[in-house]
Structures are given as structure tokens and as C-alpha cells.
Length: 339
Image (tube, rainbow, N blue to C red; front, side):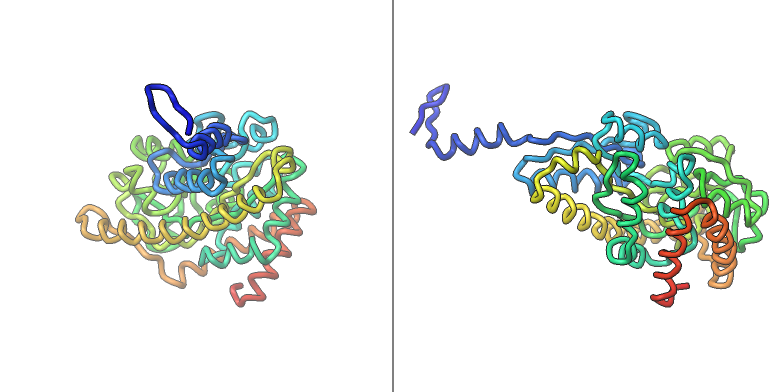
């Protein structure tokens, strides 16, 4: 036994546990996400950071920061490379300006109708290997690829056909989704997700490519956007869970495995929980007399995909990596009867 301050008595084993906990923070990291702190998906990412601390007996501590808290959403790639951030959990489409391959693999718009098909491609169809081939020269390593359920489109305008997008001012990040909305006659506006609420409130935009139904509702978008398009049909962006490559390479193998296993589990948990929240949100919106969710017909969805496929083929010509991504993704889709 050892006598502690204030007359407290502890066994040596308890003391050793306390010493171990005090020394446990071998790695303290800051990751920036692409959502605001109030969005359900952000809270799920925070929960998983806490779980990883538990799984590693406190050796790894990850603080997840909301969008714009350290750098802008298009700057996290460079910030992780430079060591300003340790990692990010974000949509690679933000980096399309540096290489169109980020936009193509980050969000092959119109390709996926089921998030689990996308995860199968990334984890077992060669997607993550291709993405690391793209990202590692920038000084990052992809630990895991996650995604959302198909995104909803909150809109002020009532859209029941693809032709109804003609002239609609829709928020879209730079890259493939921006170009495809142009193809169907919309007038895309390049804004970060954090500015969607203000832009819609002021009438700067009529609609938005802006995350899943429950996230949009949590942001209050349906106060203005009374005709949300749900289920989604267009966008299902990848969430790149990446870390500085030098940091990754220096980690013990057992911690690398724990991180890979944990973030892979987060990917599936994120989809299931957001889907449940989306369905709960949908029921609430259906009961609201001021909101009318709209489900596009299969025929209209096919029109959008036809426009998207033309854009994929154009992007494939950009460079060697975009051609690799096009060949890989379309081969996978064809092998599963999804194209």
C-alpha cells in the first residue's frame, strides 16, 4: 500500500493504473471535418474519435473540429500535408482545383444508388488503393473511406422533373457535380457548405447540393426549402479519413490496424444511423403542412444519370489518374450489374 495526499490509501496496482493513464496520450491529433458542429454526422464522427481513444487505452486522442475551425474546406489537404492539421474527415471534391481526380473519385456523381455498393468498391474493389496513389504524393495517407446515404436536395423551387432544374440557382462545390448541374440546365453557384443556410435565407440560391436530409433539417434549411428532393439521386460524396503520411508511417503496426478497423466500422455505422435519422426526419416533414418532400421518378433519375455518364467520360480524359479512376469504377459497376 502507498499513502497518498489527504490521507488516501491506494494499492500499488491502482497507482500504476493512474500513472499509466497519465502517460497514455502518446498521440494527440486534430482532425477537421466538413460539417458544422450541429450536424448529426459531425456528432457521430466525434463519438468515434472517443471510441478510438478507448480502444487504444488512451494512447491516441483525436479532437474533431468542425468546418472552417482551423482552415477553409478547400485547404485541409495542404494543412494536413504541412502539419497544421494532423488529419481530416472531408469530401475530396474540395480539392478538384488541384487535381480533377479528387473530384472524380471523391464523388462520381450519379454512379451510386446504394452507399454499401460504394464502400464495397472502395474497400474491396481497388478504390482505396487508387485513392492512396492519388493522395500520398501530397503527404497524406487515407486510413479509410466512408460515405453518407444519398444526399437530399433542399429546394425552394418545386422540382418534379430534370427539366425543372432549368435556370435554378443551386449551390454546388467546384468539380463534377457543378458541371453536371450545368449539363441539365441549372445555374450552379460555388459555395462552401457552411454558407448554404445564409445563401438560401437571403435568396442567393434556390436549391443546394447539401448533405443528407437529417443534416439539412438540423441546419434549418427546410424553413426555406419546402420541397426537398428525397430519396436522393445525385450525390454521395466520399468522406476521406486521412492523416499526415509521416505520422502514419511512424505509428506502430497495432495502432495502424486499430485505426483502420475503427474507421471502417465508423463508415458502416455512419450510413446506418444517418439513414435512420433521415427516415425519422422524412416522417416529420410529411406531417408538416408547409413542406412537401418530392421523390423523382425512375425515368427522371435515369435522365440525370445519362447526363452524369457523359461528364464521367469527359473527366476521364483529364489525366492518367482520372482515366484510371474511370476505368476502375465503371468496371466495378458493370461487374455488379449496376451500370
